[in-house]
Length: 142
Image (tube, rainbow, N blue to C red):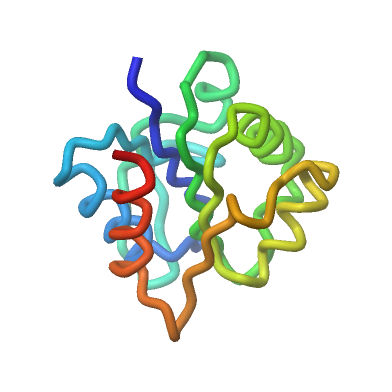
């Protein structure tokens, strides 16, 4: 089974980044799931409503074959949710990549109890566009 890229979305998430990642990865045939921390319909910080594919609870209940987890957070850190900590630990155990803004690297390291390798965390930020990171992720996953 192909490994999936899970794009984690919570209330007031960065929907522009989420859709950019999803479109870029799906275009080249990578399996992508938009994962909601709540219901499957979420409103992002720019007021755009996005229909997620599955909930975080659904992902945790199944076997998702994680290739990467993309964090597209709101202003607050999304890693306070114990379900997300469990997902990140599973991702690290599967040798998956973690993608997110630099401010979440330390939080992800804590959530995985220090087991996340620094070279498995890919940062995106104003100086490094989401599209550029998507291209890097494609190269690493194909």
